[in-house]
Length: 357
Image 1 (cartoon, rainbow, N blue to C red):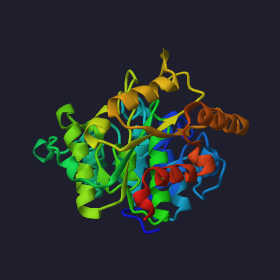
Image 2 (image 1 turned 45 degrees about the vertical axis):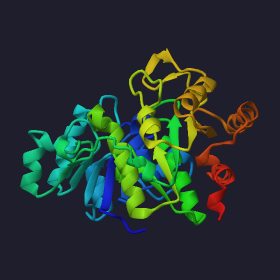
Image 3 (image 1 turned 90 degrees about the vertical axis):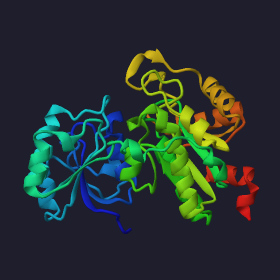
């Protein structure tokens, strides 16, 4: 697969296989922006990254440190990507020496953190000295380049399906990509509209970094990304990547996507074993049926399928939950990483018969 930018190593020290490693996880599973040559995490060194994540080898090794990774890849690395997505979006102090080491090795730095490394008094002059670039993916556009909501969303004829979740770091983006790929493989042109830094790192052509924007422009930027995709590509279907969850106390997200993106349907991703919100054990998650009710009340559109995050679930529990949810809610349910997105594709084709023509 041709990459957009080049070869990359992903830094995820101490976090690969945890909720804080979700950027690294996304890049290991799929990216068109880079060819991933390895992940750096000394706590998982020597293992295959795909085996750690999904129990399936993907040919991406995990290294204990940067020198080992560079030596193993004959110094054919262009990018060093921060694969950590910690609460608050700050670079851990323990990462600073590794990032400086990467700059001295001539690697371009890509970071999706809220802390801008290109403004750092150590990294910025070091990057200039070694002729490398630091890209802070979450740096917002200039105010003059931001868009306010205009109503041009009504010009977009593509079917829009939002992939929302009951929590943050629950797998919304992964499911959105899986369904996008399945539609394209079926000959139905589809685009994913990314709303976070990882989607950009994976090569999403259209989208925003929602949590980096001034609130007044969030709806307008969502509308503009969707409209621009329609103008340029004319896809039949757009998958809208959700952020956080509607009722998460720290990461409320999804309302603007429903209000401005005006989806025709919603896929809801959930982790059945979670009882409290990610990172906030004192805040219990509401029942799944309430999340569905809130989404359908706000959007006046149906939740057409449920998708599972299988963390802490056995194979038997996954299958039992799928059957339980399908009986209880009367809509398809699957785990796209275990079962693939076939059920979701069939549901979309069933509801939007124009796509079959």
